[in-house]
Amino acid sequence: MPRPKKTAKPVTETASIQDRVRQALQSFSDAERRVAHALLGEYPVAGLETVAKFAKRAGTSGPTILRFIGRLGFANYAEFQDALRSEIHISLQGPLTRYPSMPRGEQSGIFEEITDAICKSVAGAAQNVRRGDYAQIVSRICDLDRGVFLLGGRFSWMLASYFHHYLRELRPGARIVRDSSAAWADYLLDVRKGDLLIVFDFRRYQKDVLEFARGAHAQGAEVVLITDIWYSPIAAFAKFVLACPVSVPSAFDTGVPGLAMVEIITAGVVEKLGGRAKDRIAGLETLRHNFKLGD
Image (cartoon, rainbow, N blue to C red; front, side, top):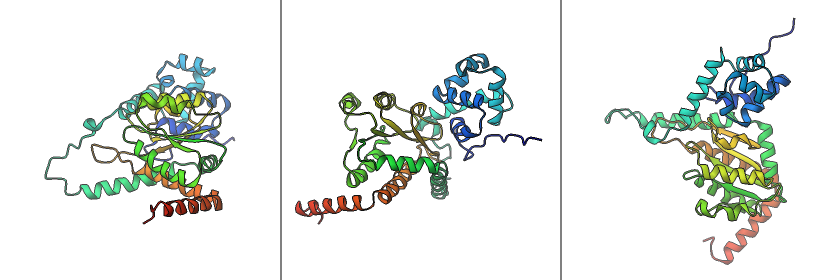
């Protein structure tokens, strides 16, 4: 007897449906893979359509759609759609929605709760990284023929800036998209085919960040997206997606997993560039000494 197919499992208990689909892509049949690509290409809109419309979009049949959602662990299509709607609601939450409901004077354990939640979020982010994707991201950053652009949102811009400070010491051609979004077209003008855009976009996702990433992709750049487990809309056309658990018992999500991704990728870049990076840093140190910036 043939062995039954395994139901797709998330890497972490909090993984989004989108992440679960990405993780299970290689285990799907050809028809199910078409459904997966249709869902990922217009996420979550495709999954909120009727079975018939979803099947037409994917170029397959209704029974294939139902087998697909069954492989994801859902009992029926309605349960699958309810989960999608729940993800949308969670991804749009702001600080007021998440504001702690714990009464004042009963927060003596908040230090331990936050510390534990942050540690688990970093571990979850690392667990969600496919080692093959990690190697390819590092390889692309180390390709000195590529320009590397970094972009973030209102808060996540700090992560992009931190990453930029590392990369400009390790390789030439690393640029951060600065200023207000009104000036971003100036940066987009310089994006060439084969360049790399590393973008940080966490809930609540910014339309200007999305549009810049979409424009860079249209010009032939490959997009590396660092986001949360509910996935920025940029994931629909990103080459690589690194999903970070960000929820902690606070009004604000934690940015520590995103920072950890920066550190992890940077370590890989240092290792791969080897002597080239070392020589560049040595030259930089000499220049700093000449300008008396090393004191």
